[in-house]
Image (cartoon, rainbow, N blue to C red):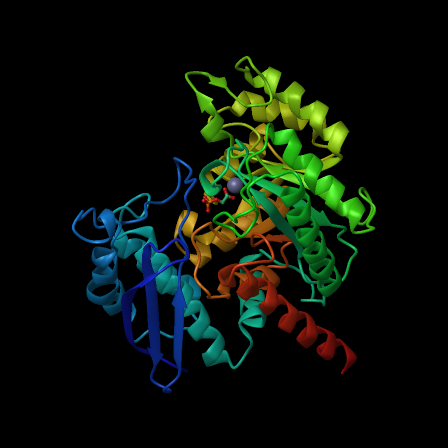
Amino acid sequence: MAKISRIWAREILDSRAYPTIEAVVQLDTGQVAVSSIPSGASVGKFEALELRDGDEKRFAGKGVLKAVDNVNQVLGPAIVGMDPVKQAEIDKKLIETDGSKNKSRLGANAVLAVSQTVNKAGALASNMSLYQWVFKLATTAGAAKENLGTKIPTPIFNMINGGLHGAGNLDFQEFFVVPATSKPYSEALRGATEIYYLIRESLIKRGAIHSVGDEGGYAPNLFTNADALAINLEAIGNAQYQIGSDFFLGLDVAANIIFKDGAYTIRDRSNSLSSTNLIDYFEEITKEYKLTLLEDPLQEEDWEGWKLLTEKYGQQILIVGDDLLVTNPERVKKAIEQKSCNAILVKPNQIGTITETLEVIRMSREAGWKVIVSHRSGETNDWYIADFAVGVKADFVKFGAPARGERTAKYNRLLTVEAELAQTKSV
Ligand code: PGA
Ligand code: ZN
């Protein structure tokens, strides 16, 4: 049995140049695990608290020295001596040590940095690949069943960035291209990347700006949100793929940002829209652009609207709760009861520990929902989340566009895992 001998953390930079935490877990076997954690820009109101220093003299107030200190002085010492394979026990200890409802005392960024790095250390101590180790934990937690298999989760590519992630003028945050789930991962990645090149050509031709946004998708100026859908659709055709069988389209509306004073506003419509008006608009664009997935189509407190949308279209398309659910068991429970959606976006840093994340996945699976494991818009080159997604047998992953190092770190890691799993099968 291995023991945790020391834990420490430091402040590093994420892909948006904001500070984040890198943690190190050292075992008495001499093994060392290192991990860093991501950060969101369009943060749901009900997420666990990310602790920032607020000291305007450093990093415009975004420093994380307090959270780093909480790892070094409080959370680390609380679990030194414990066995890194006891993830559930360790996470329980971390939750108790924080003691608040939403990790606001020590910071969800501090708590997750420890929980996630312990997860990596557990894999080292068990002499397993991280994804195999996560699968073992997920099985124990009831979050994954049967064999690990060889299937890599289907990647959802964020080709055009708008909202809080874009540099252009689009309201919706993410315009997806989604490969058919039957496509082998490496083929899906290649096809989507070819489509990505053609989107760039199309934007250049139209004279739209073609810089990239926070998640590596283009951040153009276009007249309407529907124009961005049209560009993705056209690129699929230009790449000689069939929309509706090879590739599909989807959206993360991130509707919190288009909602103000009781109404939704989008550049595609001159009047502001009620929840039902917006649902009618979604019906139109779903037909026209063959959308198969709508993430956060309505704001995080529009429970009635979510229910209505799922009642109407839940049999045809994936309706994904991100800000609605914030990887939180209580909100997931409510959404299951109210039949608010049929898929969940899972982000460990919305809740703060790996064990709680596994519990949310267990609940979601039991409800028959699809599971999408996601990065955040602020990322590091750590590919932890790719292994986590494989280990919990996620249906989909969402790691941004197939561009920018912090996104390709995850997509490339999945290529390695795909090759490893294929080898296991042939043995
Ligand atoms: P965030 O965005 O990481 O900025 O919150 C991702 C998402 O909304 O899915
Ligand atoms: Zn989202």
